[in-house]
Structures are given as C-alpha cells and as structure tokens.
Length: 120
Image (cartoon, rainbow, N blue to C red; front, side, top):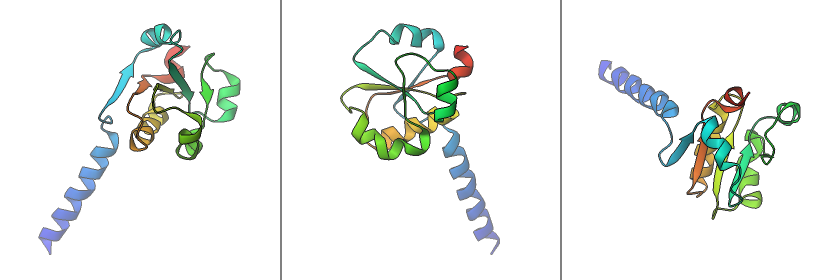
C-alpha cells in the first residue's frame, strides 16, 4: 500500500513540474526583441488578454484573441504558415497559449517574456 502512495505522489509531482516547464519548440523574446519583430509583415501578433485588458492598453498590430477562445479561433483566424508571436499581461497566459498553438500544429510560436508588464 505504501508503494502505491509513493507512485501516486511521484505522478502528481511529475504533472505539476511538467505544467510549469517551457513548451518544447516555443521561442521566447524580450520586449527589445519584440520591437524589431513588429515591423515584420510575415508574422502574426496575438494578444491573449481579455477584451477589457486589450482595450485599456495594447500594442498596435496585435490582434486580440482571448486565451479562453484561442483553441476555437486559432485554426480559423491564424495561418500555420506564419510565425505567431503571443503576448499577455505577464507572460503566464501567453505561455499557456503557446502550448495550445503547438498542440494545434503551429510550428513557429514565440512568447513575449514579461508580457505587457515588461512593455510599459
């Protein structure tokens, strides 16, 4: 019985750690790197914050697709042929959005470290 408890604990720890590890194949850029990327018309820019957050302050060129709608809208509104650069307020939601996009087959996904908080 004790063995089963250790096994369950180990599995739980594995899933908790896996949740916070960076997604394989996702690039991470700083706000300084983002500034130079904004000029590239072959890239797609997605802000995954809520519509209210986006309306309050956003970077020109970023399209608002809230995180909770991303899985449904990504296939229709984004091209898998172009790189997708994702931002949120702090980098947590955009990190989760990056995982969603990778699972849906987007090969070029970049997350902005620090999000809008770093941009200000």
